Length: 320
Image (tube, rainbow, N blue to C red; front, side, top):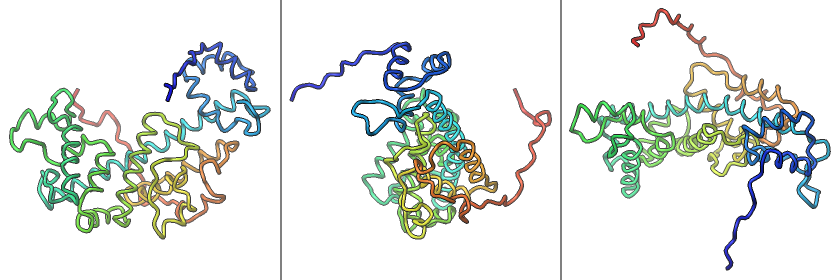
């Protein structure tokens, strides 16, 4: 088989604008377009423009009337959407770290995560421990997270820090995998109660959230993505997602259910609805949002308690 060689040249901004015009895109405000392509790569920009291509055309071209600013609207919407999702994902990540570490540490000691007896698969337990060591910089002081650095400076035994320090340094994906590797009918079942969900779902949902979190944190497109890692769906949660767990709406259902379980202050549904209303030109079906989704009981929010007032900065005893 002959080698497949990539031979396309790099394009200057002028060449990029010319190509977009040749493919039928209207560029009215050229300074705006030029500035955009200077700071947003052409490759990224045209990825957002994919839904505006003409499927009936024999060559690559955009639907009649497609403007540069139409694509820019999608870019801005996706940016705002990521900004909305990230705080919810952060709350879920912090809660997962805390619930797992607290439960296991109190019951089985500060270094429970090093004991293969707590994992369902002895082989995978070794892989899990090795992953933890790599994530916290156990063998490389230069990579040590701030939460564990002081432990290594002050103590020789045990060789690794206690769970509550370690879990502050672990990526979300590692935390999710630790949960999935724990003994299912003992540890998983007990920990899942904090989320109000079956233990079979929690592992899948945490891992799916870690995948979404990485996409969001690294500026990946999410608005119309078909997700390759999908949260498992069990009855009675199928009805919440309308059978679609590979689009954004399915992930938002997961976030809403987890967020309601762990957060004293809700608001995700209200903010999500407001964002979608602010961009009426974008089709909800691209994200698998069903008609009337915001009126469903899952999305009706009431604050369990008002958020605490922010203290005046002058009153905080902060040491420089």
